[in-house]
Length: 471
Ligand code: HEM
Image (tube, rainbow, N blue to C red; front, side, top):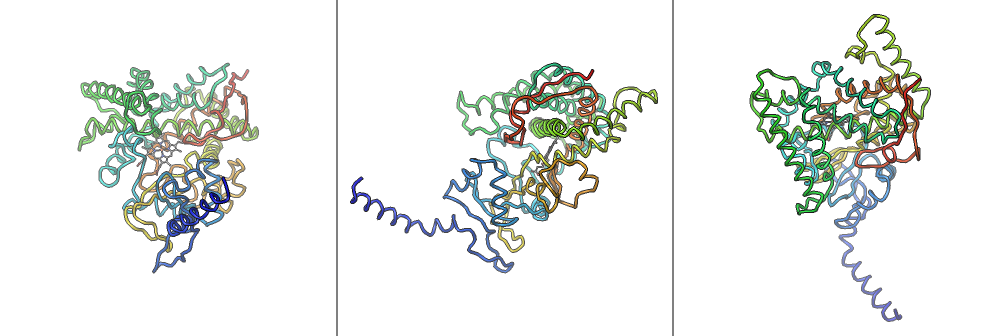
């Protein structure tokens, strides 16, 4: 390029920048506003480039580095722009509670592809009366009174899973997914599930591959294959529904709860919510179990304490001449193991954040959250705040000997959409850890550190381990 061309190019670039200055100023200015309640202003932060926003900054690194550096620079509430949407992110417990508990101001929001795959009638996408009705039905089948009746069935699934891993090198996450899938089916269909397990599994495994795909429904695309599998899944569910209708007695599982509802759910509503619950229940619980295996392996003192607690439950049952099978009452005598689960949920924070959308202009602490903007409560930042949890990176279950302050610990969310499956998740983790620690030992294979996001935080490569029976 000669000098003249360089001059012309520079002049043109300068002219372009001059024209675009007001737009760039809007997107890149950190915070030119003051914040007062009378004259609310946008939170501090940058919006990045038009449309692209700061999506590359977020996804070119560990997303938590992005959140932490923003928080350091702008404080606990800041604006950004990701995946084509302007957002407000917040890492303050009070703001997270405010957003999650005011359903009339902030509605749930998901990518279009997820809504089409799970089904538009699924609980996650709704508010108001329909949401409240679904929640009542879901909570009814996952409350302690109901799930205490399936402890021994969960135990059977746990022991047969562990037996099948014994003597093999396994990918912990993949195997845990299989365990949590079977428990989810048990809680949804009761013992009927065994008949349909393999077909449901085959279809669901194809469906899930499309969860984060582009919603292009053309032959050959991931989305198309997933939609086909979803159709097949709905047909299997229709078959299960019709068999159930021929049986007279009420069942206490989730399907029974949906079918028994006086107001009546349509078959499509039932199918969407069953697929939705499998989606909510499986990978979440499997990720946490994978982290438990990792943290127990890295902390021999904690592993010893858990093993002793679990062995003492077995011993006491033997001494009292009780049946060997675990009971609901036994799971209430596992305080150390419970704290390990709590601390794992905190450190791993597998759901780093959740999404809501402002349904109208909202003013919070003098900041304006405009209608249509996404709002992200950052669970992980709250769980990793040194002011709330000293030495936050340290795995220390004993910190839960003291109950955390209100709203500072929300691994299962908070407010209107908080997790209705949390009791079941904790129960299945306790049962699996009981058998894992009393009967088996394991060692990690390959790289020991590193986290992958897909979308839940997971140990690198799903934590390959080798499991063997204790002698
Ligand atoms: C350790 C495992 C689990 C974790 C960490 C977890 C976490 C969460 C969180 C944070 C939310 C709220 C999301 C939001 O507000 O946007 C949620 C919602 C939900 N979870 Fe869980 N969950 C787990 C296991 C389960 C299980 C086992 C089930 C079912 C048996 C389940 C069913 C649901 C459902 C149906 C919702 C939607 C509730 C609504 O929209 O009203 N989850 N979960």
